[in-house]
Image (cartoon, rainbow, N blue to C red):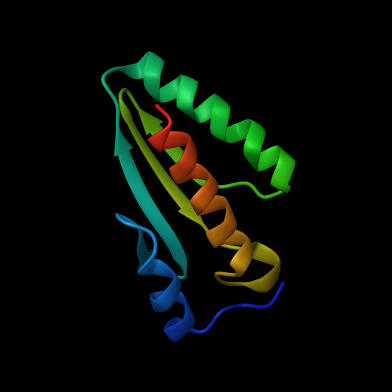
Length: 95
């Protein structure tokens, strides 16, 4: 997978509300009603990550979930990251 240019990343981000390009990765945060909802959503995302064979750097504190995506093999952001980001958005929107 080929690393995207900063310009390409900015163009892709126009289609993802709430995501930012920070220090070589795209990232976002979500807030849920409680820990149970946050963790349940993380579980649904985890299954999709396995399916796509792409795993986020993420953290969860109580009802907050922070997600960072980049492709370590490419040493930057690739289309693979945006594919997973869109999948994550679909999961969140389905809540």
